[in-house]
Image 1 (cartoon, rainbow over the protein chains, first blue to last red):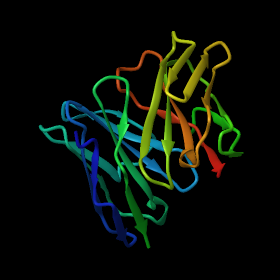
Image 2 (image 1 turned 120 degrees about the horizontal axis):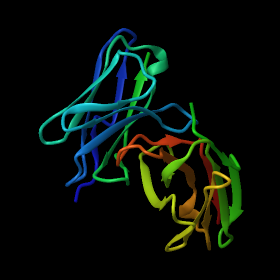
Image 3 (image 1 turned 45 degrees about the vertical axis):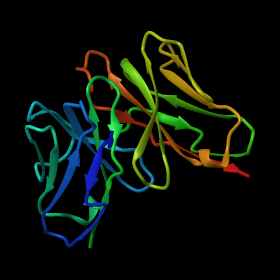
Length: 110
Length: 114
């Protein structure tokens, strides 16, 4: 079992650009959640996808959007990047209550 | 905003000693989970304790939950240098759907010195 995978590992963008991050859930998991973790802080919930629909959303602006595909994989898109979007972006998959996290994508916005 | 707080923020111990970390939260929960994170990498799931459980063990880990005080503790026994990491507790709210959003604390940075 490959576990949760994310790509890319690292990404450097400039302000105003757009970025797409990808996540493949653990085998058998149908729910994908995305979190943002700033340096030295705990992860913050962005949104969650289930059955290709956004089921819950945290306190993030509309610049953050996502998608879930029929194979349960997911994308996180961020438009009009700001310096403050620099963070570790974590994807978690779940089938029931336990959420398992991927290794994350480190996004740096210059 | 964060659900709660971990205490202490940082903990430094010698190999072989026990490490205890505490977590407090603010709202009623379904479950509480503990995670480990090494050097800004992904979170590793350690243990889940349900709101109707008071104590749970997994290997060298012991987790307690006191819902009346809205607090939990994680005990790592016989610590090893490889246990050096940040530890986070995360809660999901009572009444939420399964696999619901997790709310994290700020974490405890544990350093185990050889």
